[in-house]
Length: 513
Image (tube, rainbow, N blue to C red; front, side, top):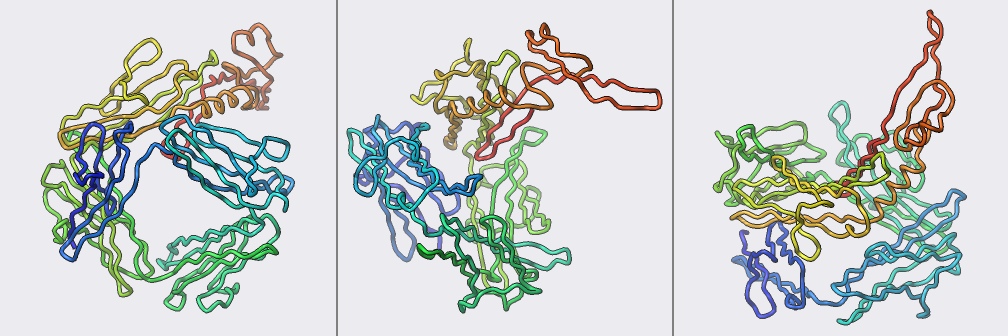
C-alpha cells in the first residue's frame, strides 16, 4: 500500500535536504547521502516507514570508528597452483592503523609466501601457492582515535560456490535457461547439479551439461513446466562441501531503468524501460503512483520491442514527477519493479586517461548533467573546495558536459573529485577517484606495449634500417612487409602516433590505442 518513509536523526527530527545532505528515492530504496561527514554528523539515524497497516523502523549508526569489509579471492597460477588474496577495505575519517592477524592473534608478516600491500583503502594479503598450513581464520583489525573495528575471513580447502540463472530465447521463440555454477577449490573437487528431489541432473536431449574451467553449466534447451523448481549446485572435496541453490519458475523476471536524453529544442526527455524475462507470455504495463495505468497521449509514447516495454516522456515537467511501476503478470504470478522521475539533476561521470608523445599523462574528469530546470554544476575536491581554472587544471563546458583536465598528472593531484549539480528541485552528486594505480598501469603500457614494434613517442613503419637520429626525436623506423604485385614489389609506409586513451565509466574500462 502507499506509504511514507523518512530518515530521523538521533533526537527524532527528520533529515532535511541541504548542501551537505542529499535525499532521494529510487524504487523501494530511500537514501540519505551525507557529504564530507564530520563529528557533528555522528550518531544514530532511523529509517521510519508507515502505512495504514502500521509502522516499521530500522536504525544505523554513523561514527568515527573505521568501517571494515573483508573479502577473499582464489587465483589459479599458470602452473596449476592456488593462491588466495585477502582484501580488507577500510574507510576512516581519520588516520588509522590496519593489520592482518592470524588465528592465534599473531600479525601477518611480509615474506616469500605472503605478500602484504596497501592500495588506497584496500589492505591486501596474498598467499602464494596455498597449502594446508595456511588454512585458518584471518582477521583485519583497524583502529583510530574513535575506536576499533575488525572483520574475519576464512582460508580453507572447502570449495566456494556461486550459482546464477540466465534466460535464453530460441530462434523459434522458445525459452531456454542456463544454470551456471562457479566453483573454486584449493583441491580437486566433484561438482554436480541436483534437482529439487536431490536427484542429479543427467545429460540428455533437453539438458546439456558442460564444464569450462571453474564453470559447471546446465543448459535447458526448451523450458517447460516440468522443469520448474529449485536446482542446487553441490561441490565437495576432502575438506568439506559447499552448495548454492537457484530457482527456475514461470513467474516473469522484471528489471527497470531510466534513460535521460536532451531533445533538439533543448527539452528534457525520459525513457522508462522495463525488461521482462518469462517462460510464458505475460501482460506487462506501466502504473503510476496512484495505481492508475499509464496511457499513451501527446506527452507519453508507449512502445514494445521484444522483451522491452518502454514509456517515453517528451518535454518532462513537474506533472510527470513521481514513481512508475512496471507490472508483469502471467498465469504463474506477478512481478513488479519501480523507478522514479524527479526534477533533481541527473548526472554521470567519466574518468579518461590520455598519454602524450612527451611521456606525460593527462586526465579528464567529465560530468554530464541533465536538468529540467536551470542548474548550477561544478567540481569540488575532497575537502569541499571548488576546482578552479589555472595552469595545472583547465575547466571547460560544452552543452551539458562539465570537464576538468589535469595536464600532467602527479601524486599531488590524486584524490576524490565530486561533481555537484543542484537546482530548485534538489541536489545530485557523483564522485570519481583519481589514483596512481591507473596512471602507473598506463605508463607501463606505454613503456612495454608493442604494436609490431615498441610504442615510444610515435612510430614509423617504412623500409630501411633503424635511424638513431630520428629515434631521439621520438620516431623510429623498422622493416615492413612487402607485397608482390604484377608491377613488382610495392613498399608500404605508414606513420602511427602513439596515443593511448583509457576511459573508465562505473566498472567498465575502454582502452584505445
